[in-house]
Image (tube, rainbow, N blue to C red; front, side, top):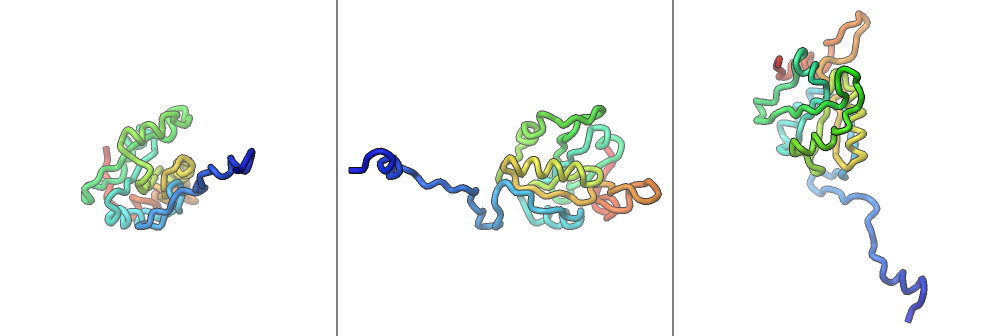
Length: 165
């Protein structure tokens, strides 16, 4: 009969150190998978039934700038602030608010902001917490150009469906 450490070792249960791969999508939960253009995200949302688009901009941006419209896909854009206006501190309830809107670890989550910077940070944050995430590279309005203006790239510039609030 084994004694001491040998006896303990015989009762060990192997533990998988990495989450299991989803055999249908070949993805591992809890990964930031990549940056995608708005057009690529639109295509993916058409074919991925459970995938969601989360607009992480502020309430002020949703109200005064408008946002993506997924009505023709039979979906809604989920709105959860990553940073809270006006002081722009990170929303401490971010994950809870996503979960309250029904987002689960098994879904593909596409994140969009104004230019793709905040949504990239939010995508990486969620991936660390077990979500499979993507970032919309140029966001809704794109980065500032040489003339100090936005709008040359992003969701709206790619002429994807959007609406004013």
